[in-house]
Length: 470
Ligand SMILES: Cc1cc2nc3c(=O)[nH]c(=O)nc-3n(C[C@H](O)[C@H](O)[C@H](O)COP(=O)(O)OP(=O)(O)OC[C@H]3O[C@@H](n4cnc5c(N)ncnc54)[C@H](O)[C@@H]3O)c2cc1C
Image (cartoon, rainbow, N blue to C red):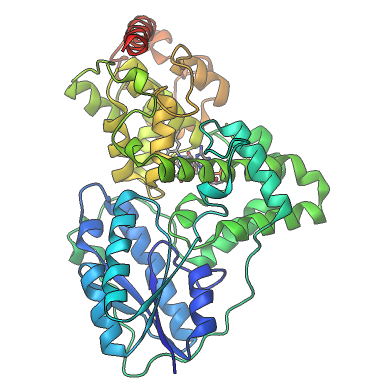
């Protein structure tokens, strides 16, 4: 009789879960466990919106399991101590888990593996959060890619040869007896403020509904609408992918199925799938270069001098820089835990190039507030905007926040939604209200974009020249 435990982490679903599939194919009885690790849950940076979303997903997973007669065990503590005890308590020999990618996850999982194996157990570890790990997507000379477009080409070549499609629905073995489903703590008990943030409903059912709705409505126009924050043109699946309420393979399979049924959707869906490949790319970068979590990927910018400007940083955080598209984005983030991708790029460029504040400060703030906060994608996005990343925006391309606003939110619907102070400003001035000549309650710009652009160009150029000499 083989007993097993599946340790749920960022894979909060029963469908198409690779390590769980392996476990249930080998175990005669099993138990699922989730561990509230104080280093993560209450740790610095793991913000309240994301924890609340995680707990909601967990509560729904618990109900999905209960419907199948399986109790979810919830423990608190360090997994490397909790898991060997639980294996002992249940008489289980197998432990399954899906791979993590951050340095913290890798160290913790190595410690878990060591303690389980020392006790005579076996750990089954599988790739789940991405389709291909970094070592599976290699350049012609066998190394990892540092630039997205050739990575993308090789990724698709590999997918065509070896599409990794979702597994069949699981046949779960009976649970190990003597355990009852445990309550998921509420956010207050974990010391998290109730918060005003309006987060989405968690869980696999909501994720699948969202994917279906996206494929039926916006996907066909994604290539045209994806940069428009005033249009509901993207999937909003990022928090679900972050916690594994849906798998990336399910997204690929369902999207390709939609194109087979309706070839006209091909262009939009193709572009959407390329965004999921960006997610794989940033995960691969983190896997290959864990130092990017602390350092510039491009060392030539290491001597760049950042401003220490607490007032400007606070104005950015609170959405009162005086640039509507920046402030609308920051207010959307604080109100919903999500921000449109184009606006993420604009606010990140504004922080690093107009305010010349270190990208790490912006990355940390995003991580605290985003429901989808993901170390790899967040770091990749920030280093891209700061021109310090792998595939970054060249340093001399600096977004003009007014021009970006006019281009991507032409009638000002998006900025007016988040900045009611601008409701009565005419469309032609809504991205530069100081030109309207009318008094508004909206603040004046905290910096002059043209001036700051010149300073940023000088600093970046100087740092690069210095970097090239050293
Ligand atoms: C500064 C900055 C920080 C970011 N931080 C995060 C983060 O912490 N977590 C996160 O998931 N994404 C992050 N992104 C990427 C992107 O903004 C979000 O994934 C996207 O806005 C999520 O909305 P959606 O689900 O509607 O995306 P869609 O447009 O529907 O795209 C589908 C999926 O593809 C992935 N994706 C899309 N764009 C990107 C991208 N540029 N990089 C990596 N993956 C992408 C996401 O998983 C997304 O859910 C960041 C981007 C920037 C510029």
